[in-house]
Amino acid sequence: MDRTILHCDCNSFYASVEALHRPALREKPLAVGGDVEQRHGIILAKNDRAKRYGVKTGEALWQARQKCPDLVIVPPDYPLYLRYSRLCREIFMEYTSQVEPFGIDEAWLDVSGSTGIFGGGPQIAEEIRRRIRFELGITVSIGVSWNKIFAKLGSDYKKPDAVTVISRDNYREIAWPLPASDLLYVGPATRRKLASRQITTIGRLAAVDPANLRRWFGKWGDVLWAFANGEDRAAVAEFDELAVIKSIGNSCTTPRDLEDDGDVGLVLWVLAESVAARMREQGFVGQTVCISVRDRGLQSFTRQRKLPHPICLSSEITAAAMEIFRANYRWDEPIRSIGVSVTDFSHDDIPVQLDMYDDYQKREDLAEIERTVDGLRRRFGNGCVRRAALLRDTDLTGFDPKADHIIHPVGYF
Ligand SMILES: [Mg+2]
Image (cartoon, rainbow, N blue to C red; front, top):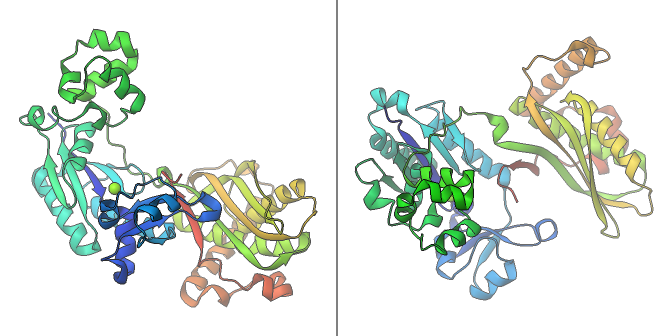
């Protein structure tokens, strides 16, 4: 029995979400641009109007401005995009638990098991397309096929706001005339190698003797042949939040320059509390802590350390961050900005060896306190409960860390 697989791709995702939240920008050429300091200022996404001026993802902001002087560039708001990504996923999950994200704005769905309830693949795709436009205000294009590769090809085939079915009956007409490089994972090197043998389309690739492909590409040749003939058998994975979020971190340019370890400790506390809260929201524990530091001379560095066991308490994150800091900073200059992030996640409900922790009961008690504080802050605001130690310098610790939280999804480059 053939599977029924959908590939959903949000159209101009970052730009669409931005336009939704800034209606005044909807009719303007709009791009989301990486932060000049951190990301060397490149275009991360653009809307259709910007595309018409030739603005491309990945090019420098100044290049884009040259092509389109009226281009509106807004900084990326990852927490917002992640929220929409999750809202999309909540809709997907109504149809199947086999939802495999591919980056923040694409996902495969294996709906084979639910066609009896919701109708065939094309019908489910239509319903999801309509619901996402109606309920979220953004558009998706969806490919429907019996394998992941052709489903992905289908979502690229017609956009925005469209469904393309690539079936056993029509794949020769739809997929085979397309360039071989439209196949997922066929990059420039493979494309060139194929083109040098006059294999330019998927159909031509499908017709090549697999033995030849194996000779030219090794094992990859078999994969290519299977892709082109719709014989990709890779399964759509069950949804797993760990696959989506790679790191949770927070940083700030401090209200005044930090002069000593005491100052750094205070700010790290505030940041770590917000990181810990966000990790608990996701149900994560993490085993690697990373700090980033920029001094007044704008020199910066990042250092990370893998811990003996996964953590999620703000006290543990602060302690680890502080240790990394002490081992790496010599105080030649005061510090202007500092950040802490945690990566290397696992789920917090996996069993742990009790002897990994010095005092298991004490740690459980602390975790309970932090969860309680999370609840209070959710209801009454971040400032409603504060650590007494942080009152030592409220200028330094009075910022709301939740406001500029950074969560790095896969595909963040
Ligand atoms: Mg997309």
